[in-house]
Image 1 (cartoon, rainbow, N blue to C red):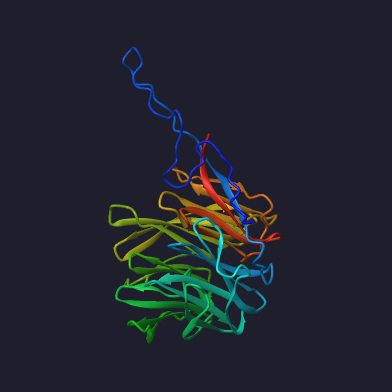
Image 2 (image 1 turned 120 degrees about the horizontal axis):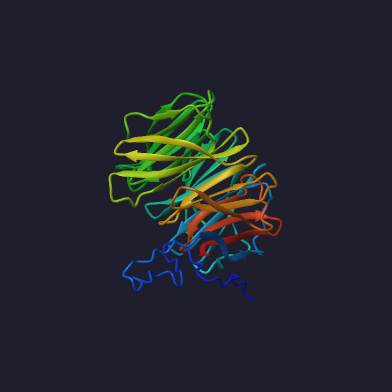
Length: 372
């Protein structure tokens, strides 16, 4: 029998901008002609659906997991952190496994230890780390066929392995020799050379697509965090060590100034900074503590609000969103204790999900917002 989402029917528990708050309309003027103000409802994160995929067995609890949103649901990929093949499976908009119920071996030419994946120009692209290099491949939608694009020196990958950069595509990879961007052009995605972004040794790096360009952040050995649009003439830096850095940007602002959130680890804590992007320039805001004794931060924008997750000192996943005042409203997920890289926070199928490998194997929790 097919497993279905287990859904909690909670009043006002909806995701994104579909939030409904019964009785929240302004009651209008009282008999004296004075408008009675109504306090806005308090919003909290809530688990509104759960899913497990028991037929797809992970190779190891200590794995690197990535989730790629697709038009029809999502593609979930994983690789054991101590090495092995890249395996994956697809889910539809209802969260049901599509294709082989046991999953599919995607790449097995080497013993890979980390992965990144994303969709660009309607192609699923996977970056898989093997030793001190990354193999880039285009993978068919059903995960059964691959075409290798090439190999690049470096082991730090962006949130997607290849991203847009004006009129070309770039693969941003970091390693001991710094950060480089390799370009791929044309309908055949042919290699067209590479550019050096920095030669400084790095500890962490990420990159994300941004309005037809790419936004890159990295942390250097001298405890500095750098932020740069790929096509911008210069970068911004701050005197913090932003390890395991992630970025989410709100591209919906009607003005030319966009905002985003950068999350990272620093000395055993999870931190965040609001970033501002105006034209070709970007800058950091204040650096704010999210949680002490925490690790593995994630961040995603759902079209309405910014969500953040991390692992607390007990290994539990804590997840929540930034409210209208910039405060972090969060909750713990019950019995979800993945390893450091064995979970992801992603927006797909119209909602925010935590996808993880835990004691029960592969599973997901769908998050929504509840009004109290």
